[in-house]
Length: 151
Image (cartoon, one colour):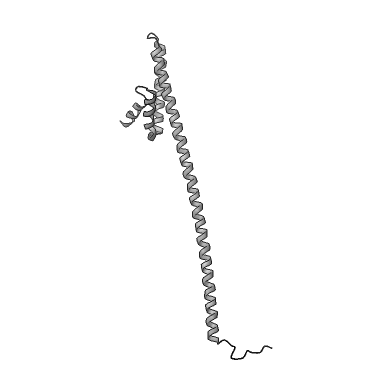
């Protein structure tokens, strides 16, 4: 059997209860703080992952826009080159070749419709068409189709 400690060494019950309850409160507060800290860490990890995902999406969008822009410019350049070759072939043709002129007219109509399609597909890039026309010095060039769209 256990013997009781002498009265002089004993901690009064009220003091012991206060200490015990303080310890329990501190443990609870520590546990709550630990959980809050873990929650904050997880939330920051989720936010970081979302930011990385958004950054990847933005990069992909920029790449797609650049690809579209380059494709549009390539198409516009091809059309400008075709028009330029058509103008050169018309200047070389003899006046008596009416059959050749009909073929050239059909090709010119095809180029004009292709130009309008490109202009309708990418209206924000039509300003680039002006620079292509100026560089290639094509009279009447692709810029005329933009005026038709405005009416």
